[in-house]
Image (tube, rainbow, N blue to C red):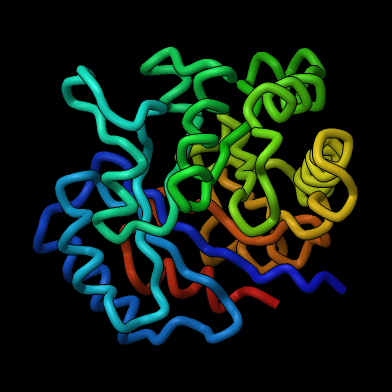
Amino acid sequence: MSTRTILIAGNWKMNASLEMAAELIEGIKAGPPPSNVEMLVCPPFPYLSSAIALASGSSIHVGAQTCHSSGSGAHTGDVSTGMLKDLGCTHVIVGHSERRTDHGETDALVMAQASAAIDAGLVAVICVGETEAERDAGNTLDVVATQIAGSLPDAATAANAVIAYEPVWAIGTGRTPTTDEVQDVHAAIRANIASKLGLEAADGMRILYGGSMKPTNAKELLALPDVDGGLIGGASLKAEDFLGIARSAP
């Protein structure tokens, strides 16, 4: 049986308000979260400071949804990993499919962002995943392998990096792959990590599933041998649903 600690991460995306953020954090704290599960929330930038203050003294980690790859400079509107670390963030998501699509983020940029996160002492949550067209063409494993090779820094370890597999066609659609399909992709990702970083890193690194995970399907997904948690979108905006997913962990 795996000794990897389950990580349930909530990506709020461009949602919530200051009041909603406070209610969510307080709701999770009051749950309370299961002691055998690590909980992470990733609010929009304007609410990070409040979320960190509200989560202080609890087991809840707070992370950002993206970062710039440079430490400082003329990058209007961007935020560096050093700023996130200074604020009190512990994690940062990089390479989410919405960033790759909406902002043209490439594997090379995602690797630079992940490297900056690691250098700053943050945990990089590195997202990979295929589109519906790529899945229908039978290219899922090739796409994911290419993304792992191009997005995962050589400095990544089980302590400073997490992989999140998010089939793009399943995000927010209510559709999910079968459990066999999820396990096959996660096992392939672990093999890709082993090829790049070695067996020890691959065995210890957590691989999250992100694609319409919710309380009703979390138990079967989290029971899979190579699924080490979830990157949760919509269901992370309701404390009870988010906690319900966490309570489904084996």
